[in-house]
Amino acid sequence: MSDPSDPYGAFMPGPRATLAGAPEGPLAGLSFCAKDLFDIAGHVTGYGNPDWARTHPPAVASAPIIADLVAAGASLAGKSKTVELAYGLTGENIWYGTPINPAAPDRFPGGSSCGSAAAVAGGLVDFALGSDTGGSVRIPASYCGIFGIRPSWGAVNLTGACGLGPSFDTAGWFASTAGVLRRVGDVLLPSNGELGLGPLLRVQEAWVNALPQVATALQPGLAAAERVLGPSLALNVAPEGLVAFYDNFRCAQAAEAWTTLGPWVEATGPAFGPGVKERFEAARDLAPALAARGRAFRSLIQARMRALLAGGAVLAYPTSPAPAPRLGADLATQQAVREATMSVTAIAGLAGLCEVTLPVARHDGAPVGLSLVAGPGRDRALLALAVRVAAEAGLPG
Image (cartoon, rainbow, N blue to C red; front, side, top):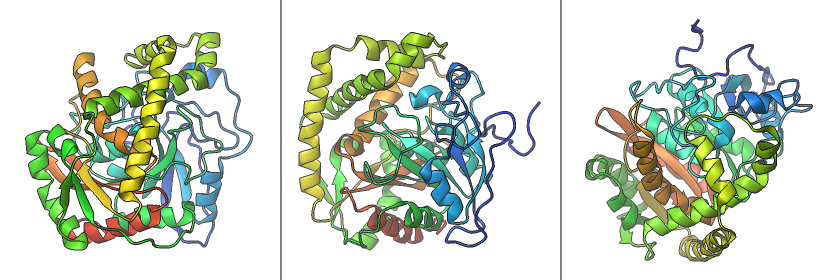
């Protein structure tokens, strides 16, 4: 039986894990949900898989990020669905049900923070917590037509959150307005001043990687960013080709995923849905030389991108190269979309950059987002920029 309070299937089934926010604070009166990989005291953290839930006891304490939001006045409305062990980008979950994409009901919501994105896009909460390792906040935000941020790696406390690739994992969030996105950042992000930003740089490889119609649809959004930061400059950042970004990210992440979760997989023998099972098998069988190559490539990209952005430059490119795949797309189609998408999300992922996606356009009846990316530690300035660009683009502030 469907839950009338959850028409999009965004929340985990069963009794809700709820917490009342403090009566006063910067987030007083706002509601949020949290991806079911963040601990909430007294509740099992299910991590999107029944076997994980079965083999783990209730959390003794809530994750600090949850406690900080509640102390700031936000009320927790429940736990939201995730792809199993956060290892997927479509948002599919065969055990608990795939959330409906409120902005495009015939398409996937995106993952792995699928429930959080659906809850915000459907107006069920004001903002939602997710996690982003390879694109798991940025892509569902793009697919569902909402704002989302992947902070600089290490900027937000991940204690009390299930891990996938610890040197890539970040705690991100979604909001229906740029202003709320920024208000949450004011609570969660370290205070390091409003560092200046500019100029604006168009990453040519990422624009070419997108469908031509998507690139065209995003031009008004890019123009809004140019009205704030000045005319954009075109440049190339991937002389090796974006496919090298995908391949090396995939290998480095997979090695960490197996180190982090492989012992539990081997001991438990869990049942996995399609795609997730194959990714863990590939991680298990990954040649050590490929993992080492991925880590070396990561060091190269970190040095390159951080030098490029050290003075405050901002990258601009399509968050996802296409709208969300349609429901029922076969695994081969999903994998092709995954590769094209992660070739671009790997830019920030490999270099540990902060990235905000803005819901500036639609193509083929579905949303697509524009990403603005800044150097590590410029998260607050990037959120302030997002508010200004959103106003220029006529988006919710």
